[in-house]
Every structure is written in structure tokens, then in C-alpha cells.
Image 1 (cartoon, rainbow, N blue to C red):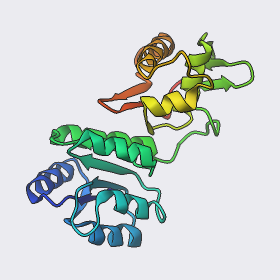
Image 2: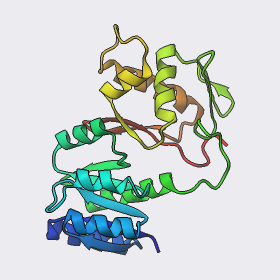
Image 3: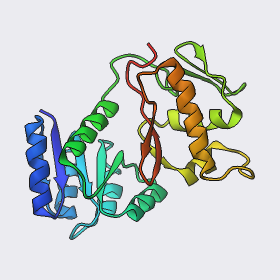
Image 4: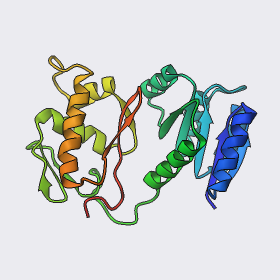
Length: 231
């Protein structure tokens, strides 16, 4: 059974989360402080950890930092403030997703399922750098999905390149601006939204049933590639 560690010092929240996860078929463990949780995570890494940021003894950011020295299992951060997400993104510690309080327990379970699917070992071989079905030609700035040319602008290609080669990772607009474009003179952070919209339209023309780019409210964007997409 899939084991999920919940690290949350607010016992009412932890109890509700445990109930919903158990009802969904997951095995759960709860820790109310960061130090105890870290010791357990390092000794026996779970399938996924739900990690609050504000914790006694050791805060969630430090737990994440130390845990990443020992394990790459998926970790979803729970936070009450959007500024904390900005800090996490800036530190680039490797969280797999972020959920802001207050949250719906059903939404949290759905996010857990999505992260577990995304981080599961692939069942089919795929190219080492590109998402399944997506082919990037870095020399000529061309991209195709399921054999169909996407006809991207150079800026759209740069954005797609960064997002698709880090599936599941959430990028802020500022970080995308820094990574995706060599020349940022005529590009603002809000222009990223326009480029993402164009990318979604062009990707959606090939695979209309799937939204490849996930918006994270108040934070940025992440690439969501299904294991069998484009096949």
C-alpha cells in the first residue's frame, strides 16, 4: 500500500487529511514536528510526504533541504502564505508541488494522486530529455508533438524547452524569464502569460483533450506530461 507521511502541527488539519487519504486507500503516518518527521523520512522514505512549512523544532524548508540529501521521493509543501512559495521557488530545494491553506481535502487528495502518477517510474521508454511524443530540435528551434510540427516562435520554443524538460517542476514567471530567453529587453514577466497561452493553443490543436501546462495560482507554471501522451 502507498505510504504517505503527513507533517503538520495543527492536529485538526492533520486528522482530516489522514481520514481523507485513508479513505482513498493510502497508508498514512503523522508527525507534528519537523525533527521527528525528518528522522523517519530519512530512515524509511515514504512514497510521498505532505510537509507543512511552519513547524516546531525544525521548519518545513529545512526538513525539505535535509531530506533531499537522502531521498528523491515526492514532497508536497503545505503553506498558509504565498510568500513562502516564492521563497521555496527561489531556494530551488526540489519540492514537487505546493498547496496553499485553507485547502479542500478532496483537492489535496487529487493533487496527491497527480503527483504520484507524475513521479511513478515510466512504463514505456521515452527520450531522456523530451516529454513523451514531444521532439525538440535545439539547433533549428523547431518542435513537434506526435509527429505534428508546432510552428513556434523562438520565444515560445525557449519556454517550451525549459518547461518540458523539467516535468512537474513549478517555475515562477521571473525564473522562466531568466531561463527561457537569452535577451529579456523586450519581455516582461506578464508577457510569459501570453506565450503560455500561445503554447497551450498550439499544443491543444494536436492533443485537445490534454492541458500540458498547469497554472499554479499566484506562483507560475508547470509542465504536465502523461506517460502515454503523444503515442
